[in-house]
Image 1 (cartoon, rainbow, N blue to C red):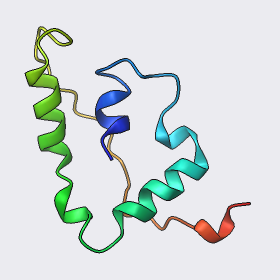
Image 2 (image 1 turned 180 degrees about the vertical axis):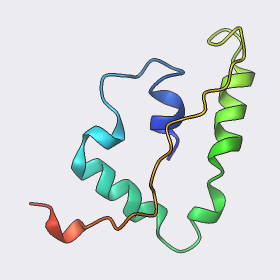
Image 3 (image 1 turned 120 degrees about the vertical axis):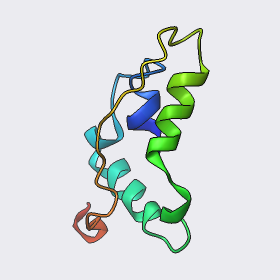
Image 4 (image 1 turned 60 degrees about the vertical axis):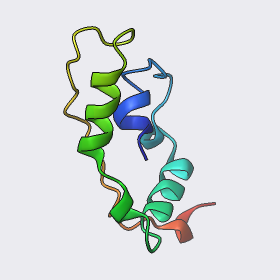
Length: 81
């Protein structure tokens, strides 16, 4: 859940986002929408923790505000090949 919000920019794992791979993005939204998952994901807390606790990676401790990820959109698994 935190890859696009944290790992992509903060840790420079920026070859490809989850959003850029339709199959991975479908599975991510499907997982998020499973009972009991969404209420454990607090993206503001995740961003704040990673961007403010890794001084060697982010010495300014500036916390990114995006991207806003639409985990609740219908995932449409039935449309995949």
